[in-house]
Image (cartoon, rainbow, N blue to C red; front, side, top):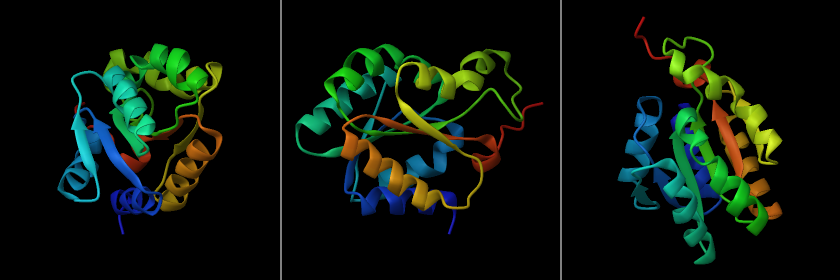
Length: 169
């Protein structure tokens, strides 16, 4: 199984039904899989912070959701996470391709991508980084369980060592 298969399995096992996303080449295979899977309702977004609203509505409607985006897009959600998701205790899973570290060629990706975990820590959003394909399904399973048991978002940062770095040097 691939890391994508493991993410899909972890989402299904935990009844995640809505997946909001912005296109991202590192997550392209995962996005294609959730779009093709009848277990998921997919919501393409114009901006990542719109996902906070979509997933808030999903939760208030009694469903579970996930947000797929890259770390630069996650940066645009910080106000929504800090002023809505965290204080209103609205859980969802964030699955974020982390840019700005190993293999990064684009200077604009470095500041937030490199600091994403620390910024999330600073606003009280629990997170962890997945660097290899070992235990991806278990990590997704535990992250969803954590988010919905404590009623707060949880973000999994997917490192380029897992998703593959963009080869644009």
